[in-house]
Length: 296
Ligand SMILES: C[S@@+](CC[C@H](N)C(=O)[O-])C[C@H]1O[C@@H](n2cnc3c(N)ncnc32)[C@H](O)[C@@H]1O
Image (cartoon, rainbow, N blue to C red):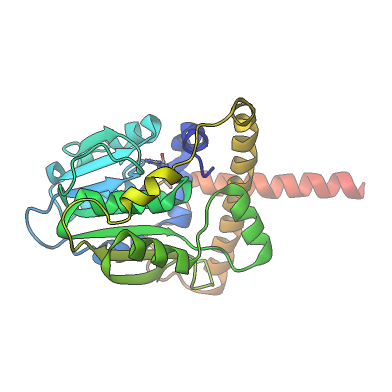
């Protein structure tokens, strides 16, 4: 899915389920609010840009501290954006369809850049991070949240079939090369994940005016247009990527149930919702049917 066209089609369908399935399991309010604290959103009159804003889940955290009219949301998926636009607390935000690697705004325009869970779809993450640098003012801060490469071989294989799961050192290198200073990071994870290294939130400060010092040299590395063969393979790649991504839903539901039995919940405000309970029921019924077919 680390391609704009593939991500577009993936979210064409996932947008229908996104708020119901994805956030309560993988990107919770607690993770979001802990991450946003790094961006220092406490000052008045900050202009904030949320890139890859999707259905507006992270934006909803931002507007708890910043007036919605000072927040600009950018996403390449009209379907995701339609969900965000329908949310009452985001009604006064500015919405723009656009690409994280070529953000349709002026240079040195914002005080804060936020991007949560989007980098994994960017064909050229370094380019996207240079764009984060470009659009904020000197002294401004850019907060990026993304997944970390899973540690177990099986999860890593499924994850890498799905999309980009960078290593921590890659995130840091991209930030440093883009020109950010005072880079800080924290790890974030939902309560059902036992490993610490699930996701990372990192923030850096822009020191100079204008574009990233690296911007000129990475211009030539932008991905080329897809060939006809690659275009024909797109539906197949979207299907395989979606199946791999979809595998994480039962994995997460099982993890969630295991954690609920083993330990009291620690601060995540979401309970499993009816859609997720229905999925668990569906998985159980499928397992019973498969076992019966094998054993009879
Ligand atoms: C996992 S969702 C995250 C949405 C939101 N930030 C949140 O916290 O729920 C990833 C979003 O990134 C968007 N996206 C992927 N590639 C993009 C690109 N190149 N430019 C802009 N948005 C992109 C997708 O359309 C999707 O809405």
